[in-house]
Amino acid sequence: MGKEDEQILVVERSKIEQVGMFHGLAFDIDPYLEVIFQGLPQFKLRKDMEIDPTYKQLIPYVLMCCDGKYLTYLRGKRAGEKRLVGNRSIGIGGHINPVDDMSLMGFRETYLNAVEREVEEEVDFQTTHTDEIIALLNDDTNEVGKVHLGVVHLWTLDSDEVAKKEQMINQLTFMSIDELLEVRDEMETWSQLCLDYLVERAKTEA
Figure 1 (cartoon, rainbow, N blue to C red):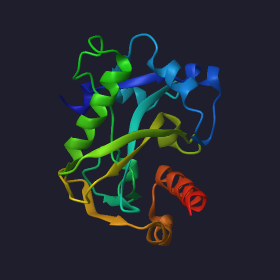
Figure 2: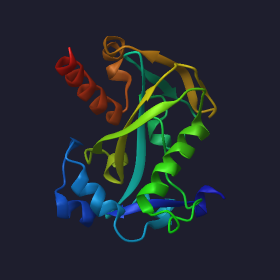
Figure 3: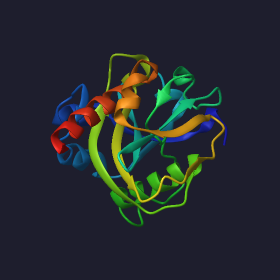
């Protein structure tokens, strides 16, 4: 399937607004997830959704942590979102496509399976992990953010054996929070917002 006819999972912006539109990270996630996962999933043409802010493209954004360090990489020229090329990221994930029949297991369960598949398409990880949805992420201050809504997952890995699969992933490595702060200016906006949260989280856990 080419980019011209790629179908992606979206949610109507008005549904998010019913709960309350926000900027940055929202941690009271259950009311939003209830709205997102109720009814039937909507898949629409990506080329149309990239310029239609009345819909939000649902993007799982997976932070991988091992021994207090977080996976990070640079987005190369083959990145699906050209507007993010060259930026550093701490999030793995991408668009959800209608590969699975979401009517069989329920929307939410199939979404979680789709997240696993999306991550496995981008990186090879030889380890077990936990998966926690910790926040939703919204940033309407730029053209990319206006049409995307992030579902932030925190995967805690039992090993740092992670290698890249996608060609767009460069300089894949684990960094401490202090190391990430040194390169914060290189990060895409979503990663900056997530890093700021991780900094505050570390303070409370200290």
